Amino acid sequence: MGIDTSSGAKLSDRDVQSLWRRYKDYEDQTARDQLILNYAPLVKYVAGRMSAALPSHVDEADLISYGLLGLINAVERFDLKRRIKFETYAVTRIKGAIIDELRSMDWVPRSVRARAREIERTSVALEHKLQRAPTDEEMAKALGVSVRDFQDSLTQIANSSLVALDEVWSGSSGNETIALIDTIGDSASSDPAAAMGETETRITLADAIAGLPEREKIVVSLYYYEGLTLREIGEVLGVTESRVSQLHTKAVLRLRGKLSDE
Image 1 (tube, helix red, strand yellow):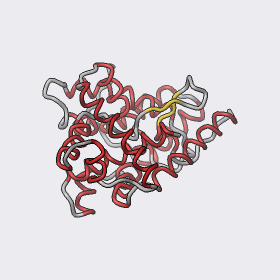
Image 2: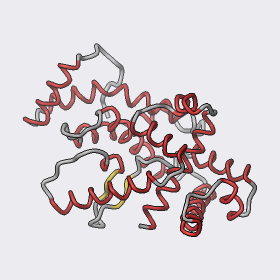
Image 3: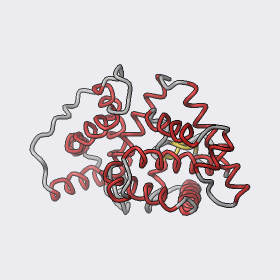
Image 4: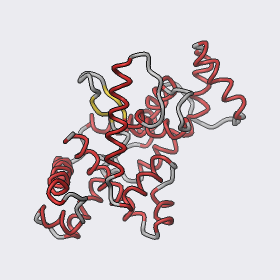
């Protein structure tokens, strides 16, 4: 990419806001490049966290390269009127870009992909039947495995980086894509049809999150809206980081299944 991600002198909040105004109001490309450099440490942070859960042959430097594309996309797409911090928006875009590239490499075992899809389908079917979110015990029984095996599957899926709310979903037009992070907060759009599509997606997602079991709802809220790490969420809930990872995976698979069903 040719961009140095090393952190230099930190800009003040006033300087950063000035850069945003220059870029968004006047399309100043120099301001754009300075914003990318200012936020580049986010890429290293995300790549470092993700590499810890990936096989050793996946080079962190490659993850940084993929993540930079996500950061650039975030800077270009971010709406200053949004009610979320840019850092929150950027981290999800960076992770999404890394996940997209890893998926294109198709290194995740097919068995793990198949298991994720099976859990999605089973969760949706049980929820329709029970009129509530199924428990681990009910999921395990429906899948024909032990509770321990079911939870081990969640850990495998989480470690493959297969699940994240940062993923891109098909838009209402069928040939456009919308990242779920783009459905959070207000977003002005000059296209009424596109705005309506995003509003419907946001409402659907909000309803789906509201229907999650309480602990999964808390994990989603703290991770995506408050920016806490899985370890920090574990401290809040009084459980291990691995258990939080399982709760996050279950939540996202439930949401993905619900949105696909919708």
